[in-house]
Length: 447
Image (cartoon, rainbow, N blue to C red; front, side):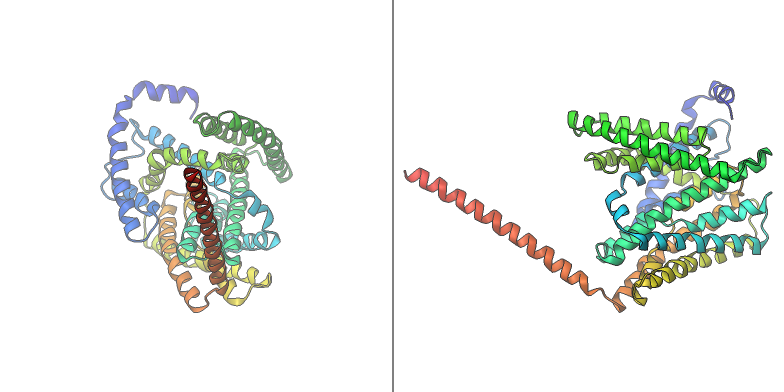
């Protein structure tokens, strides 16, 4: 859709017509998100179910293909994707990411390679075809390669094992996993677009473009980081910094897709990483999350359900969804667990790492959404992705709790004891200083 089509669209449509569908999406998505949280599931599950209920699957109250407001909802959802990846980049601990060493990198590579091959194979096995079976199968494999960092972190935090060696390895590997997944997605989308346009661009040129983008990102990132450090010293904790950071995120997303042929979400993630080491990073993330989780996020996750349609649903799709869910979880456990064992982790820790890496969430949805938007995948793929997210999100905390009850990490007790001791020493020092101050005050009064 070009600028003329967009202009003519807004000339025909009264913008107030989007208000009622948005109100329904917000109310139902928030309500079901709270229900999901009560059931110990991520809120994103409830928001997706809200889209399924409101969309063509069940009630068909909100039609995302409606010419009066469909484009507006899709545009808001797309901005939500970009902001989500920017927020993920802001939440990255760059020092830990660089310090983790080759172990997490190797585990992440295995965690991408095995599910990628498994997902591609399963798609071929079921014989599903929407036009170009090779790129469809490869995109499905890319969906399976993604790990949800947020769900993994939350599960480990609730169990009390986030600060252990296994916890740090899972977290770092999951972050690297998502970066590799974004690069793989970029390759798939770029190659598929070239095939559709009849312009079979040399793979070397594509690699060169990707390398050039990341080189420019590093150079521009260094300059921007210095500029924002100066700005945060001049105007600390003001809205100026988040506004400029968000503007750069949109700009970086635009040039990534327009000039380098790289997915806009990759540009947004890179922009987040550039700012993640600022003192104001948490402040920026806090302000971005307000917009994301109150407005753009619910629309994006609900749009996943809104885009799903029962037309074309069949027994073969149901069987495919069941098989792909099982294969996706086993592929992560086998790939990451085997590589962890090769990196000299114990058998129990290797199994914990494999299970911790099997959760799927936002990134899997984003890859699926990108595949559908690019015309590579059919909308029915959401019937396979949504059960995968729900099942893996439910099973991961349960299985991890069982594993840690069988093989507890004794180091955690020592870490907790040491932290408690340090807190007690700190409090004793504070009381001693306070006591000395009181003595000085009393002596002064006596004099």
